[in-house]
Each structure stands twice: as C-alpha cells, then as structure tokens.
Image 1 (cartoon, rainbow, N blue to C red):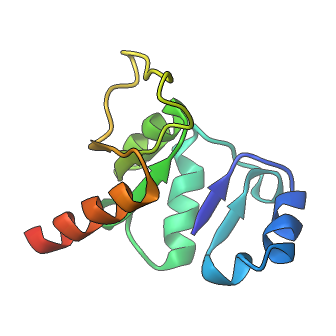
Image 2: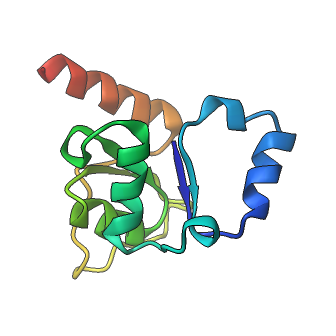
Length: 115
C-alpha cells in the first residue's frame, strides 16, 4: 500500500501513471484526516490491508516515517531521498537502511527466510 502525507490529488496522479492498481490500500492524509507521524495513519493502513502492524513492514523516505512506523509497532526500512539525509537521534534507527528499491526487496526476502 501507500501512505502519503499529501493532498487528495495524489490519487489522480497515481491513477494517471497507471500505478494505483498496484497498491492497496492507498491512504492519503487529506482524505482520512490523519497525518504522519501519528501512528493512527499506519494502523488504519494495516487495518485496510487486513494485516497487523507487527506483521507489516513500512518503507519510508523521511525520518518521520521511522518514528511513525515504530510508534505503530511496525518494522521500518528507511530509503532516504538523498545520501546526506540524517535521522535525528530522538527518532532512532530503522531496522534497515536501503540504498535502492532492490535493497528493500533483498531485506524483505531475508526477513521471509527467517520465518
């Protein structure tokens, strides 16, 4: 799924690009009245996906994504938008930091092998 702190126009962009069909659920803050880093937006996404937060993995590109995912009880993969972005100490580290979407996939595969 997708969880976005954005306006409802994001949904139209995803549909125009032909990408919306690949993601379920799509949670957009303006539509649901929740914003990251509030863990409630993550919990809503898990509920709509039919999953529990502790059985879910969140991939985010902003330090607040780590904070939000952890507050909801999720493991987090951080995929920073640039190599110079730092995570503030008060947020703490993600379980994994990825350099690419391929790295994210490798992390998921390794976690699945663990059981």
